[in-house]
Length: 227
Image 1 (cartoon, rainbow, N blue to C red):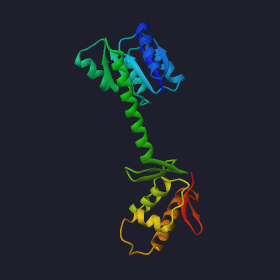
Image 2 (cartoon, helix red, strand yellow):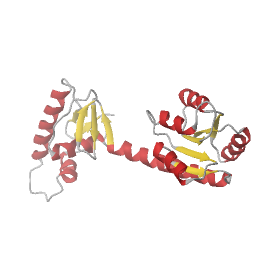
Image 3 (cartoon, rainbow, N blue to C red):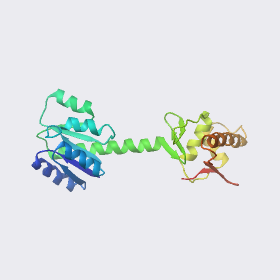
Image 4 (cartoon, rainbow, N blue to C red):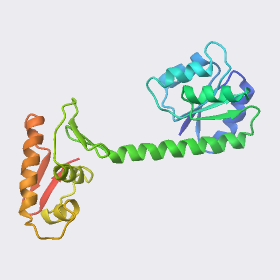
């Protein structure tokens, strides 16, 4: 993990850098707002510790610009302890706020918490939104579309089958497994029902993707979507 420390007070930057390096983080430093934006453009940064009062460009304006195209965690630090200043920082897009003078150990604890939250959020996002070949599948909204934005209308069962295959790339599922996982009912319907639904699903997908075969048949075994 790489952390960008931004403050016009070099002693504060160096002090935080020592503590963060001891925790195993990589460190980038900036001493004003414009330099901070340059570092963000040049490097892959996982979290920013950002002072509010700085020359050239203050922390509030830096946060506004970052939030136009990034959700990177921002821990704002300021000597201003007024509640309105804290509220302004958080409303602008900061994820957390710490008042100066601070205990470096408190900053470390807040950094770890923000990184855990960011990692959890990213994992959930990856689990809920899947890319499968030319498709983007959103589990939460039950939306399937091509990567160029063309929506594909599926029934609830067709979506369930597609999401099952796409969330386990390269794994072959038998008709029986697909039926058990997606139909969620006693086995009083023929497994041929799965074949009919997959046939309809394929037709819709191929129509939307100019004939691309997203679902592969493994003869005598079942169906899969290749990674």
